[in-house]
Amino acid sequence: MAKQNLATLSVDALLELRDEIGSILFKKADELKKELAALGADYAEVGRVALYGKKKKSLAGRKVAAKYRDPTSKTTWTGRGAQPVWMREAIKAGKKAEDFLIRKPAKKTRRKKK
Image 1 (spheres, rainbow, N blue to C red):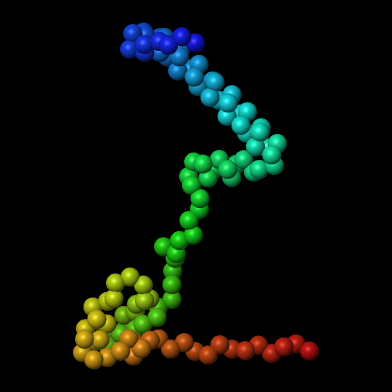
Image 2: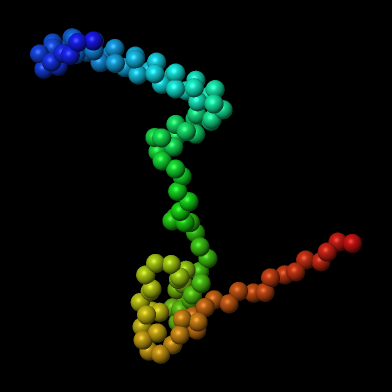
């Protein structure tokens, strides 16, 4: 195919060229999918990774049980993120972070069936 100066082409010629390029790309994509299927790869997963990247295993957005509690206001903190003001001030006053830990009840043990 000879090189064409795209700026000199008419709008109709440009639209025709765009459609031709789209159909060629579609055919190439089908060929690649068939090759991947022949190799035994899960091409849907490969395509997802190509478009969006690998899944990130992030803890962001997950709910976490509270770890610390302020005895006066009963507000809690999970231990993630910035330290709350009430805890920061209490530590400056001489207390320790362990003083605010929420004590969890002992786990119940199950009896084994005979």
